[in-house]
Image (cartoon, rainbow, N blue to C red; front, top):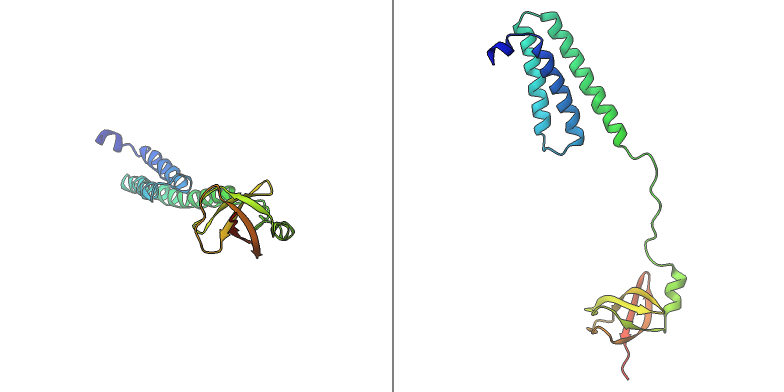
Length: 157
């Protein structure tokens, strides 16, 4: 191992591993381990250059490593940025649909305790009972719509 570290050109391998690890830190969830390894590799490579008497090369490698890490992270993060816009999602069913449900009857799909789902007018909708529990399969009638809430009551024969 000492024979390998006596060659000053091995420092460039450590510098490359350091820059690569710093760049991968952006894309791989490592909890900072890759960042710490990257700084350690780069620091060891720079130390090796100074230890072997290549002071000018050491300073150049410091500048190049910092620049490579900066630009790699900057352009790497830019590639991850969202470039388009997301479509606007509806916050609930249209109001005219809700208003048309008042007075219609349906069948409970999931137990209302007090919220659940019912099949009304051929569509599965989220509904809320008026406070009482309603079992699955029971017949319900829409009594009101409040904003995006559909309030139902169990129909008794």
